[in-house]
Image (cartoon, rainbow, N blue to C red; front, side, top):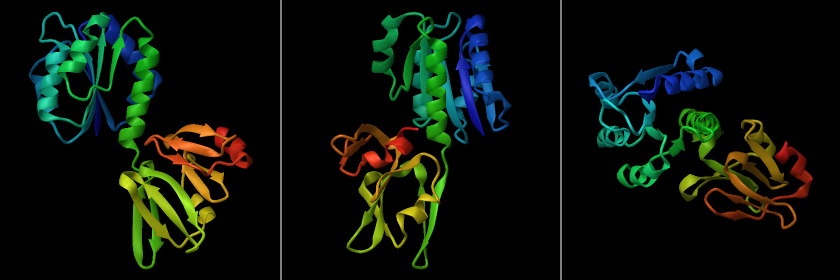
Length: 236
């Protein structure tokens, strides 16, 4: 079960967010619980204390008959460092105070500055990040290797040992007796061939330079395994 918790005392803004969630088809997903509050109360406190679900909080900073969204966020962080917090407000001068006071804020959105577009993008990004449980499973010499796809940065071929190397987060490497093509068939659409000796996770690529033959990962690492031959498949 996952919860999206909206704390907003302006019913017009509440309805705007409801329409946005319907557009994202989140309310049709039975695994999601969408909760609306006009301020801090015992029910919201109970939700904060529930550690068994993943949560996204959308908090209005200024609440007329309640403690502020910033104070609610502080209460959240006393109990929960994993759930995501998005602040919405009518006043951009609250930006610094929110980020200075609350640990790990996902975003700060002004209500009347493309709120719908930004909020939709944020929710999609969080859900992709939080709910991505797809795994690469490989039997390798009587050992079963299981890796979250989102944690795989790229896969290269080791010519000397005739194996492939799966490069994962935290500088972890796995050597497997498979071909690139065999492993590519086990992966999903986020993985593309970038070179005859490389498959990369497009979600982890932040820069591609075909002229110089390299791409950069979101870690900042530069990988010199990008060929123009595979550009069409990468860019589609």
